[in-house]
Amino acid sequence: MTDLSTTIAGLDDRSLLVLDDDMALRTRLGRALEQRGFEVRMAASVTEALDAVKASAPAFAVLDMRLDDGTGLKVVQAIRDARPDSRVVMLTGYGNIATAVAAVKAGAVDYLAKPADADDVARALLAAGDAQAAPPDNPMSADRVRWEHIQRVYELCGHNVSETARRLSMHRRTLQRILAKRAPR
Image 1 (tube, rainbow, N blue to C red):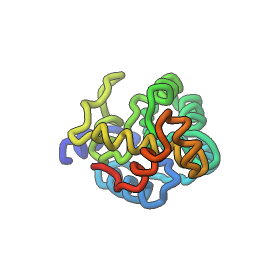
Image 2 (cartoon, rainbow, N blue to C red):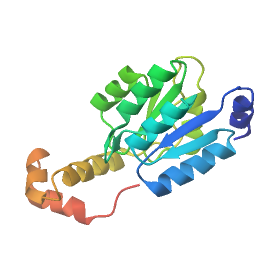
Image 3 (cartoon, one colour):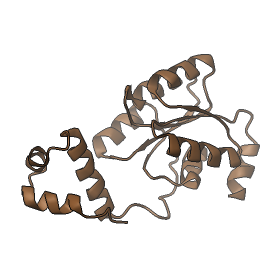
Image 4 (cartoon, helix red, strand yellow):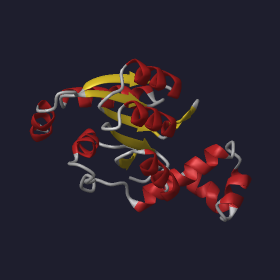
């Protein structure tokens, strides 16, 4: 943690915008990044984030991909238009290749899966030039990624087991068993 704090101490502008609709995650991540030397502003919606960017474009941003009132990609574009040298990291609980590509094309420097460790986020924000941060020390297991994907599809299908099973090309009873179990680590 010390090396991240000293790295950021040498920067002139340490402004950081944290956008996430999950209040607990937003608060915890914001506090952790403040301890690492960032000057944190927080937003709970795309609208709040866009207003914050108009008021003062941050040097750094950590943005959630999916929010109730839109997508974090809108905010990436607004930040890039206002401040091309900014460094943006996208966070998502439901990562896939298409959204990662879209985030990078929009101007994000990295794309991390939730729950992301504050040190991993800080490393991604402070990575030199266009270099990406090293892989996380504790990535989600393949079972956890699969479970998160199933949960996301289930949520998008309005908690309809039959529709979710059809979209995932899986037997309904198999899906019911998976949904009844606890999340893997």
